[in-house]
Length: 104
Image 1 (tube, rainbow, N blue to C red):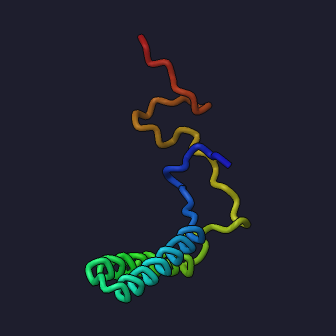
Image 2: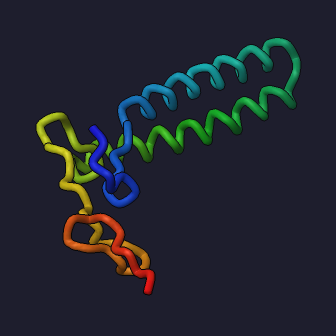
Image 3: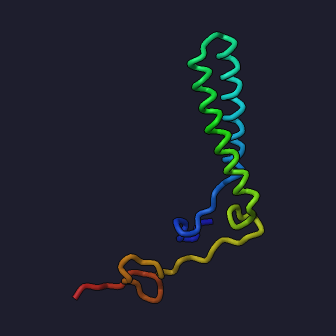
C-alpha cells in the first residue's frame, strides 16, 4: 500500500534479503571447495572472499531481524499515515496538501 512518504518510513524486506544472503553463502562456499579440488587457488580465494562478504551480510540481517518490529515491521503493524505536506522543501503547501499558487 502506497502512503506517499516512503522515503521517510520505508520498510525493508529483511527475510528475503536473509534468504538471498544464505543462498549466496552456500554457493560461494561450494564454489571455493570446487575450485580447491580443481587446483585453482585464485578462484577459490575469490569465492572465499565473496563467502566472507555474504556471511557478514547474513550476520547483519539476522541482527536486524532479532532487533524486532522497529527494524522489521510485521503484518500486524499498520502502514504509516501520509505526510500531508509537512516536509515540503520550500514550505509552500496549503491545508489540503496541494501546492499553493505563489504567482503574483
